[in-house]
Amino acid sequence: MRIALVVALLTASCGGIPPSVRQFATELPARADGQYALIPDDAVRKQLVMKDSALQCRIDQADGKTEVESGACKCMKSIADWKADCKDWLGAHTPQ
Image (tube, rainbow, N blue to C red; front, side, top):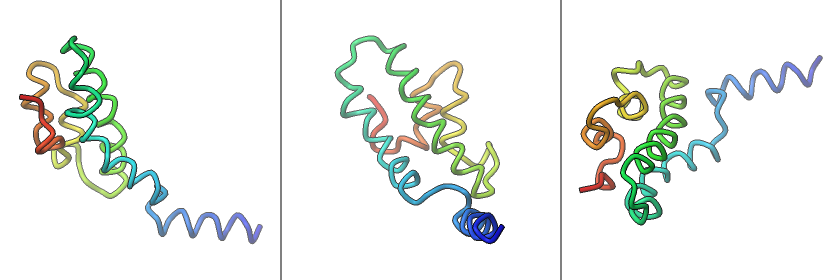
């Protein structure tokens, strides 16, 4: 029982998402102009970027941001112009 309480307190104090996962998520936008730039199919690049943004969206939501406030969530739900929708999340890594 004590162990469960300690785990619950640690999880609550960290927002439920380990720091290593948060760090990994901050590095994901760089894949758009690094690893993904070599992929010739724009539809495939879009899917990869949207999948990457899903992790950051989940972190943003755990931190209390709404989907409207989160650039990652906007990217994840992109329908038409994914590059424009993902610009807030990708920043300087937005494909040209």
